[in-house]
Image 1 (cartoon, rainbow, N blue to C red):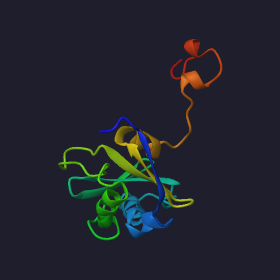
Image 2 (spheres, one colour):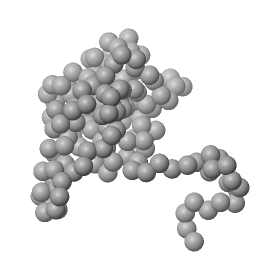
Image 3 (cartoon, helix red, strand yellow):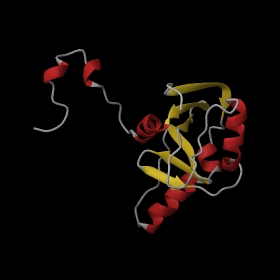
Image 4 (cartoon, helix red, strand yellow):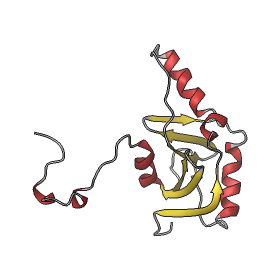
Length: 148
């Protein structure tokens, strides 16, 4: 794996409605119905896509969804292999492993980039921006972020 955590993919975009095309939105709404929850899923701005073995996965906010292996999601590994000249992959070697990278998709403009898996996961699961202690500009050493 490369030392780079974030890999730009200039010129590579996904349609802004990609989460609908791969049935992420439908899967979440169907699950909410089974739970008898009122309302519906409000789509987030960022989505992450990766494969555990040959199983496509999508994640956004608190939701991780196993997707059907059919176009357009099934085409992502091959397209990304071509775009990155085989250097980066969003596919793990086995279903019980995670890949080195996750494809991050910005629904606002379709932009995409690859992010080291754990960092990408934290990013797409986040629901609120959070400052690191060293970024606060105040006495970060004595600051309590959680707890009484």
